[in-house]
Length: 238
Image 1: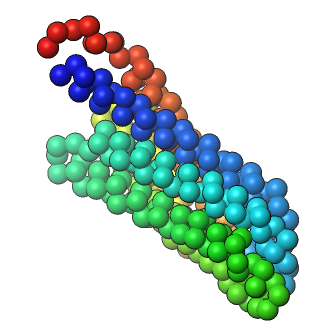
Image 2 (image 1 turned 30 degrees about the vertical axis):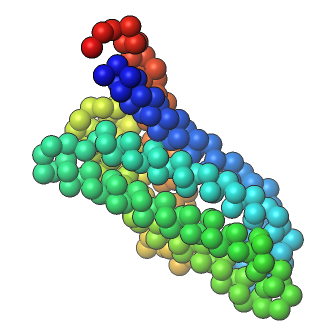
């Protein structure tokens, strides 16, 4: 019994560490993206194709960091779902939204950041620059579209998680409201497709993502601290 309890506590710690690593990898990926040439979804196909070609190695670095954050978030998500789900019908329903919304959120971001950026960095940025600028342009805009759709599903995760945090009191109430606000912004940005249809979509998405990262990071740190503070029962006889 003691061994099982200690093993369970260790895996819980790993899950919250994964949440912290998710934030670190995602921030690092964002910084790498900003270090490249200046390009936006409103630029011409020729400029986008040229910048992607010039910085194709950077696209591969983004891909590698994205592999890390995608895996880490799923580990964090699984443990958060176990923590927040309850026994009532309402809690079970909201818990299902946390799990399904979070899984779809990270899957679509992974397709964008791992799949498309990896293809561009490895092969297609060179081909697009030399032969078909429209292909690079389309794939670049597709990353915005996939991220935006992913964030619409992420809005379900964030809103449901925020409500459950407030109801169950497993985390500070203010953190629940942060998650709810992130969910609202994630949902509204979808009407601007993350900036492709209208610029407000990108603004709302960026604000929502900052709030989302605050929720993941702070919740992971708090819950990891609690796990580390649990008394050592290794000397007890069961």
